[in-house]
Length: 99
Image 1 (cartoon, rainbow, N blue to C red):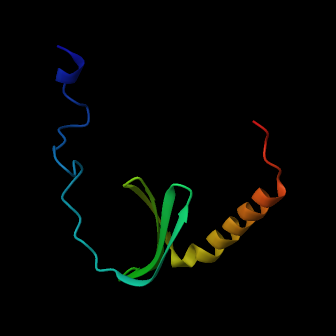
Image 2 (cartoon, one colour; image 1 turned 90 degrees about the horizontal axis):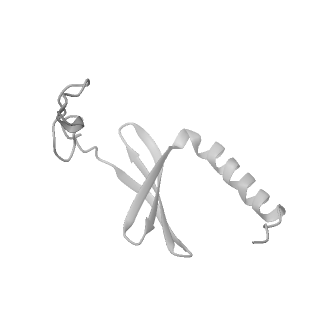
């Protein structure tokens, strides 16, 4: 028996688009504000949204058609902003390394 013929200790997993359960029901989201910025070869889309669970900021990074998202609940936006401001200040103050 080769390794991929042995039964999994975790049981059978269904195959398909969502191997770990039924598809999630879409949640209605309202867009409150959206902005886009191009930095070098990356496009960032910041969208303030609201759904029945509350408000959140979705940050989408698009690089050549590949998209990645992070979602920040509105309750954490001030802390997130504070950290981004600290990073921007550090980047301005710390000299770049010479290659």
